[in-house]
Each structure stands twice: as C-alpha cells, then as structure tokens.
Image 1 (tube, helix red, strand yellow):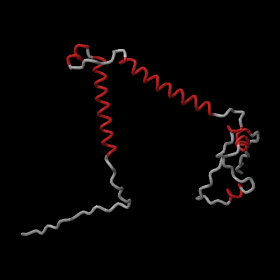
Image 2 (cartoon, helix red, strand yellow; image 1 turned 90 degrees about the vertical axis):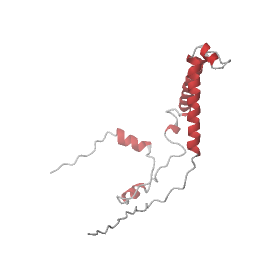
Image 3 (tube, one colour; image 1 turned 60 degrees about the vertical axis):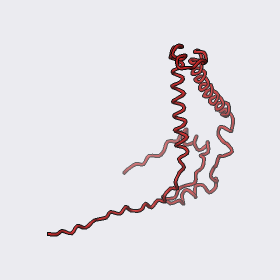
Image 4 (cartoon, one colour; image 1 turned 180 degrees about the vertical axis):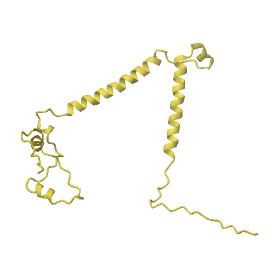
Length: 157
C-alpha cells in the first residue's frame, strides 16, 4: 500500500516592524579590546604588588616602580572619586536658590494656565483628552494643603 506523504511547509509570518539596518560591530570589537587590556593590566598590577622581587627579576623585568605605589594608586583613585562626588554635591548646593528667593518658587521655565479661561478649559475637556501640562501656583497649593475649611461631606439620606 503506497501512502502519499504530503510535506507541510510552515511559513514564518512577516514582522510588522521594519527590520533594523545592520549595525557596525566596531563597538563590540573595541569593548573586547578594552576588557582584555584592563584584565591584562590588572594581572600585571597584582603580580607587581604581590610577587617577591626575585620572581619579578627572574621574569626578565629589571625595573619597576616602588611597591608603595601599589597602595598609593588605589588610594589616590578612591580619593579622586570621593573628591569628584564632593565637588558635584557642592556645586548643586551652591546653585540652589535660598528659600527666601523667588527663584525657589518661579523660574524661567514655569508655565501657568491663563487665569480667566483655565476653569472653562478643564470643564470642557472630555475624559479621553490629555490636558496641557502646567505648574500649579503656590497660592493654590497652600490653599489646598493648609486651608482651615473642611470639605463638605455627603450625607446619604
């Protein structure tokens, strides 16, 4: 009895997203070179810091820096990083306006809604519309946060 076999072919659907152009692999190559060279330099640093002098001389290295630099280099590096953090933190504090300065509340990029038509704009919006982005005036924030009036409660009756 002869059976006929039908081959079913599966086709992969095409992606609706356009294919990205081929990227250069230069970044991967340079990343590998940097990773390899830093690993090699770290191994040399550890050998210089921990191997005895006679081992280093046996490898054919006749001159190398003093061993105190094996401790000073990481210490200077850590201090440079901490100093950088301190400088950036100090610059941020220095550029922050005082609380008594109006620039702490208003700045050149503040955007406030028009006072006359703001309420009508918000009431006329549909639920699906995205409202314009505005800064809330400080007086309105203070009235909402520190007002002595209690909101009226609904009484179910």
